Length: 284
Ligand code: AMP
Image (cartoon, rainbow, N blue to C red):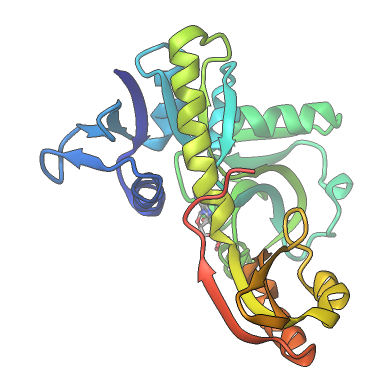
């Protein structure tokens, strides 16, 4: 059984559980606080803190893990990203007091920057020849300027509201991050094959989430224009209808955000019997 290290709490932990469930890999734990669980009968889940996952995987205590790319990069360990889960999207940014110019180059020499990501922060400033002293903190870097610890922060943000509330403005992006399935790059053989299968299963669910399957009966003569409205993955499927010469059924996958426009456009072309359904998995 391969061991997969998963987040033990928080929003990411719930989202990961839902993703595995949707992929048909049910997490069966022996109680809410269990540290391990059977995962789809094929893997064993280890529930640990997101920040410990890069080390556990790099050291071989787990065969793979799911955690933020920000934490993987901060760990400095050589780990491979097998799949982008498109969850927990955020950015690691440099922010300064909002009365300062919105320019990274305008940060005065010898400024202090508070960060929970000291390794990434230090290499970011060093690569740009900026003389900024990084002060490691274990959380809430955004309050450091209020405490007089620093004038600059290197912190995670998603909506930007925490930075704004603390009188800080973004001046540069250090890293963009999402949750990833990670493993040691050298994993091979059976283990590699199992991880590739896991990645394919999770990926097929992620890919399907923002897609819809749309079906409609279209007037045959409108087909060239229906094709423009329904490009699909490789063009729409067109099926003859029994005893209906004038109409054909057209099926296609469209992005969820385009469904509203697509329905209106199909209606305008004389389509009827329009059905839209969710897709569970999509393997291209
Ligand atoms: P924001 O939405 O920018 O106000 O972020 C709220 C707080 O959540 C910030 O203090 C960030 O440090 C933290 N945060 C936002 N996104 C993430 C993430 N994906 N992973 C971990 N922490 C995050």
